[in-house]
Length: 477
Length: 99
Image (cartoon, rainbow over all chains, first blue to last red; front, side, top):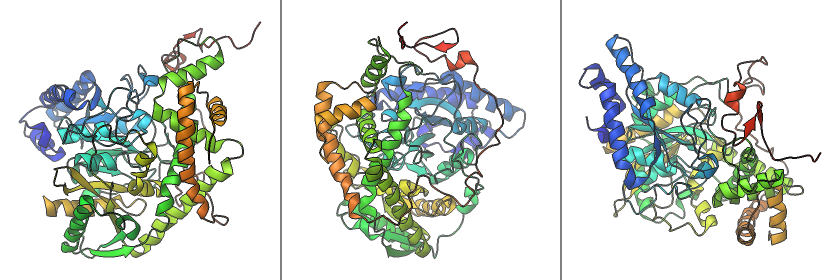
């Protein structure tokens, strides 16, 4: 078995043909993941006992002639902002360095019930705040494609392990691009489903109206399989949607001939780069498949970053208020009074980006500024969403870049937070609207750096998005 | 919008962050830049636009709420397991009220 090229269907075939057992695969996956980690720092910690328990369950089901589940024997990595019962969940923060959750996230419960083997928890930006994975309290992740470059963020570790071949699939989380951008930088598939499609129960809250859990994989089919397992209504998350989950495998068989593909003029206007050339080439490929490109306009695009950084910081400042030094493992040694316990615990244990966002969010929610900033941003969010709803009256899908540039060098953009925020422009718009979006590999630059093409569709039309992504992948591989 | 250091200290106090003097200086500068940038939103007239607090779907507001009945909760010792300091079934914090 060669784990870096394994896929879910191949694992299933081999297990059922008894070429190897889930326990053998699990042991090898754990050994290779641990051996490969020093070069990338993509895993924060491993879970050999938990993974081997899952493997034993799969082997027992196969021995009994029962269906071992759609993720049987699949080595999975989980971003360390998704809670795992009895398994440390740090959010890549000093604040939660020793936090051991008392319950499992719904997505974790579902993927293990489907036979998945969680081999470890992945590194990320602290509390999922960042676009480069350089904000982790436990050191940055290096991009396996080019070790002097960032893997993107915030789910940098989850993208890196799939690209490196030290997991077959992984879970990440996306608030403003944290799945799509690292998928693009590392050359793998990454999906941000419709808001509410996957339960957020057990996803440590950053910006609740924008947070999503979603999959990473090396093939479109594997992401679709993992998404189908974790998607669907969950009573424990009141924002999880009631809409039924479609059979993505059926959708991916369908032809894309005649599909209308919207190209937002605002996204392509300033994109004179190798990234732009590769996306143009991908659009030509879609045309060759019978899709019909249509120029569209998303007129409020220029306001998306401002809107996003008001809403996400406001929600973050409120969500992160719970880290008070009383309940979540870390308390400052200098905590003689209640006020000192709060202030010193938070100043010592949060990193710079978390503090920056807490400060900005507290400011925009503070007396006298709520209407001018927060409420204003919520209104502009309506306009941005309306742009997409209007566009989807003309087209079936939108195709766009994921990031204006490929993976950059470690340290290159750390000194200017505003510039780092501005690079999120193409992913933030879809997040604000809550529509499904994904990144699918669209070739490499002359320096060998991967570039992702973004596909966006209507609310709950993951099937249409996956159909287009699969047709493109089939035509280009 | 320009934030001075006094305003930064006020916000830090609201956020329960004991910032160092260096951080205060730094944040005054960075937050001013970011706030100046987001003021771009004022170019838009939004007087007739409804605010979007959630991604809304075509269902009743309460359709996704579960029945209001008691379910299982975490046992006290499990809920306290991550506390830096606990005792007698409670989280322990520094003395709040002088005797």
